[in-house]
Image 1: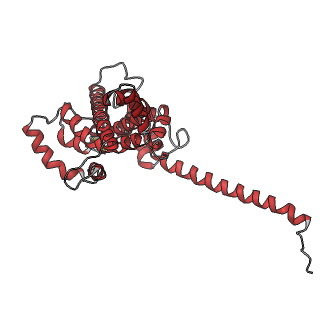
Image 2: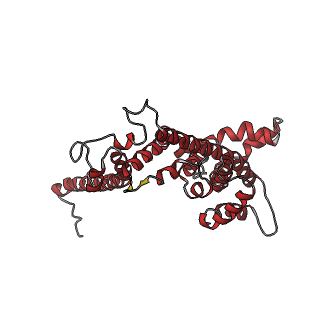
Amino acid sequence: MASLSLPSAPARRMRPSAGLARHTLLRCLVYGALILWAFISLFPIYWTVTTSFKVAVDVTQGHLIPWLDFKPDWKGWRSLGLSPDTLFQTSTVRDEFLARFENSIVMSVGASLLAVAIGSLAAYGLSRFDYKFLFWRNKDISFFFLSQLILPPVVLAMPFLVLYKELALLDTRIGLIALYTLTVLPIVIWIMRDQFDAIPNELEQAAYVDGCSIWGAFGRIVLPIALPGMVAAFILSVVICWNEYFFAALLTSSNAKTLPVMVASQTGSQGINWWSMAALSTAAIAPLAIIAVFLERYIVKGLTAGSVK
């Protein structure tokens, strides 16, 4: 009979070390790729923030590292009246910035709250009840809502311009709030339907047995469980509305102008004022960055709650 040969002791000792080295190499490659992707993703923000502290020469020459390539200067913030030496002085540019900042907050938050309120009701109906309209069913209705995101905004430019002119909604906050609500409503319905689908029907049936109505079960049982999803939908809606430029530039002129429109208007006789534009962009990015840092867990929890059932 042929004898079964066993690997030698040195070979047995080398196999675990080779596996460990392969595992370590794989982890280094993964973390290296993640670090590279983080650098690529965050570099535009870094460039924007540093450009707000540059003068014209530093911008044109592409200096990147403060105190090594260039000496930071408050020129960009001074042009907006937001530097330490001009903060307590009268500044028309700062007043305009605060007015545009207020418009962005009011319209983004107002449209997001309205979209979450309407979208939650629509999503709950699509999740819990069966609808039939001609050949349309729940899935067809949900796809119709989601398909509205495919439509290019420029296609709606002329209809909205004519409609808002007839309704006297041009350059008004109410007009943009209504438009932004329609813009983010499909996203809210999509997110909230996944949230409601992940909640067992037995919880509501138990509430019906205890004497709750449909609205009572919805308000006392379903909404508290779906709250993370509502927070995620609200934050995502605020981000989309905050960054919207096309309709804000098309339908406003002075009273309802938002921050993105003001950022894009930083041009002078000598060209684009990159330092002023960077300072404005940094001020516009700051609120969204704060929201992302402090509410990250709600965003992740809300967006992934319906992924596992």
